[in-house]
Image 1 (spheres, one colour):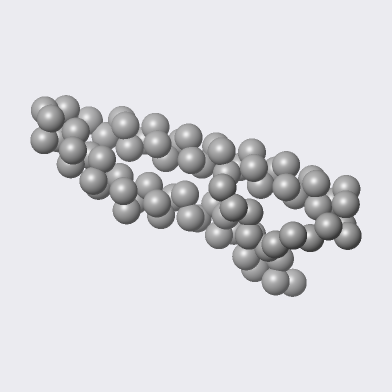
Image 2: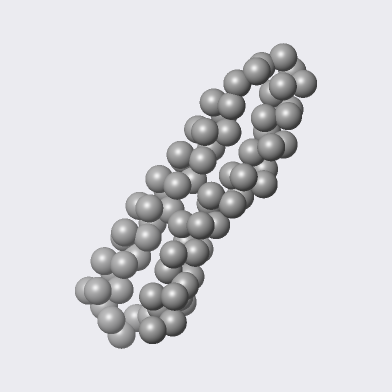
Length: 76
């Protein structure tokens, strides 16, 4: 039960990190003369893709070995 409650946060954390630090990244690029949000989008896509792949492998590992349940949160 708790496993299903905490699993969505594995995808939400990278999105929130991108929102928090994306402003700083876009402000830095704006100060340097680049008026694009493409770097923020790239950071978001890389984090999201990494966490999707990581969660996929962890969930399949848990299905194959149900006795090994290290934690409910998939760390980076």
